[in-house]
Length: 471
Ligand code: CTP
Image (cartoon, rainbow, N blue to C red; front, side, top):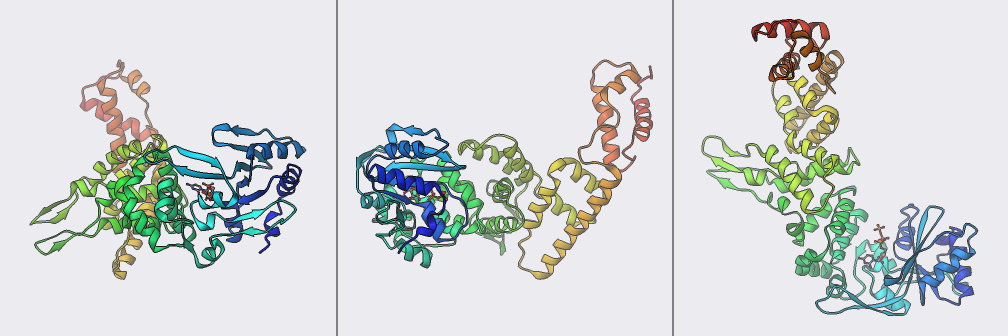
């Protein structure tokens, strides 16, 4: 099969010329070829493998390019990188790689194209297209990767136990590709992953999180999480989630399986947002339910305070996985903490003051919170499903009405602490905080409108009650 049409980017002409000049056999390999054949339509980074020195080839390519791009050389790995028209091109010499037992350091020797293809992760990632003039565009596919692409199968070139033990992250990559591309992982691979799941422990958190993010950003993330669970990888990387599995029954009362419920919520939210952190919030919104689960004869199963406990767990989980402890983490925490609030409001008569408090507490994240809560509706009862959605619609309308009138979002106290100090000739003291809090409460409760005149009148009244004298 000839795939000249995959090589329309002009960088390939230059690589061909450089490879011919150096008489160095060269191929484009891996993700670029896979995604071209899948018509994924993304301008991909390009991986070039040379049968010889990849660094030499990179230098020659840079010489031939008018822009003479800088090359970055990684001597220890025998690789070199350059950027051309915003595309990263990585050059590597073909390697025959074997790993010493009990060591993570590979023994690297020069190899043939076949050696190099053998040590790649999946047949669909081992496809190579020749770049030299002699054989230009020829597809080299020793493991029937093309057929696996057509049949939508993830398969390793070698015995899966070997491929996965060479780099255990590949177990997650298999699941990530299956999720992103909607492929099946062949049975012997699934079995091997399940056997070797605990080897994921030797992989750095950064690489694990990278794969988790990619699973999370797929169209149907639950596919990946179900596979992670089935192969027992999930219990090593996100035990908080596997702890949600199962249905307990006592005295004829059951609760829902919060693991499968969570996955439904993640899939639901993914239909409405591509925001990675909102999707994380969906994944973690119920993690506090495992440690707070209780049963009592009177009320059945309860998860009191699970939102608070869950939001504390978010911090620990992010820290353990070395995820950023920044405003993104705080957003996830806040959404977990508030994840039941709109639901409680919508179950009851929707009052103005409840809606004002919701807007006040959620601040800029109110829309995200509503998106999460709507995704949280997973009831299979069509009547209830409709009712809950209708109620949320009422909450949304009320939010709009209240916000237009009261401007609670990004609430600024209508009377400042400084003004209070001046009026009552006070030094910084507890009384100022008490007065400010009383004004805020009165506005949220709807006792006074959110404007300065009303706030001052209310403040004077309160100050009088507190025995403060005007200056
Ligand atoms: N590869 C591998 N084992 C790994 C990582 C990568 O064999 N653990 C090989 C595969 O042949 C892969 C290529 O290196 O196609 C490039 O890796 P990478 O850039 O990580 O992945 P892509 O396949 O390009 O896909 P994506 O960009 O979606 O991650």
